[in-house]
Length: 498
Image (cartoon, rainbow, N blue to C red; front, side, top):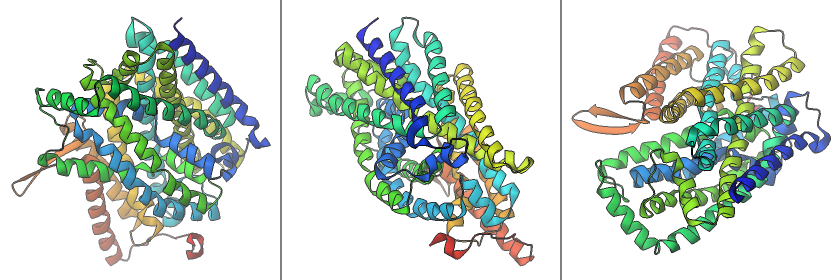
């Protein structure tokens, strides 16, 4: 066994043990949904910072951002401004949501939608959207892990299947046992490893390649000479695409169920606000990480599967033992968000779907949520077994488009009750159908080209779907109000938001 494989195996075993031991953290009663799923809403600034960072900066980010820059050049840097834009949104939206959720005991965003609009159909629609959008996102954590595991065998990705299965059995086990406390504790290890790895990479690799100026020169020449020319600078034709990708993804980042779960675990509104101010530090890390895509081009790394670019780069420029540390950072960077995503999705189903069709028994909701984490892990594993990697990535991009269709009901609902719930449901449906149609027409990519008044606009599908959603929701609301159709009961009060 190589030293890299030994270090990777030891790291995975160590964090799995931490995950199981987390069940003893604070002596919590883990039969309570709030304790198991939200850590008792008791996490302070430091724990929340690591948890949110572990939640949002995943193995897929570690693998996919450099791979995208490697493939398309400057357009791949949209992830840096999108993450930066998202934090002011989080500061405003999530601190307000945390307040009303704490006052009324909400566990999910769909809980708020139910009380705000008094409409069970809209609640279930929001909940199921979150569950469906989470599955390919969890599966993509496996893409990052498979890229690492395949380095240790001449059989490549096929031989990574047993290792992936073992890893996700561990995720399911410690998530079932310890709930949110497990990824919160492991996140400390994950973020430390990632920071060490990225800083070492941006210091060592460019120096070995002759400096950043040489890296950019080689990358620029290589990108320009491709069959579909790219550039290390955005072209004017890419400005609109880049802007919509950054803005649209920023709007959806914090409404995913795993983001909501992490935020609701904070013990105070001030903890949420502090983290919204501190988390942009991760955007600096993301920018450095993206530059590794140019380093891979300059180094002449060739990979039929772009998800292997970063592991190949580390294997070429670092000794075997440090490559093991870097591989451990990627794999642990999958284990943490995968656990949070499973908890977020299972919360939605247990609290907002299962409860609607059963007797409301809090203890049973916890049991259902815990069992669902195992089911969701298994479904994600099957997803990656039977769906080719490019399609898995495409489905995750489509999942983001679907998730954004809950924005009017959830985010706008935090400030206004003007929209009619039936109109929001119609807008949600139209946005989903349009997003799926555009994704299919564009070959399941994240962007779609519109031809408007002689102009050609290529932009993010999710944002186009949201605009249609808002137009339909506003139009039908006006019609229903004109017809004096009952708009349901708002169970929240103004004081709940203060």
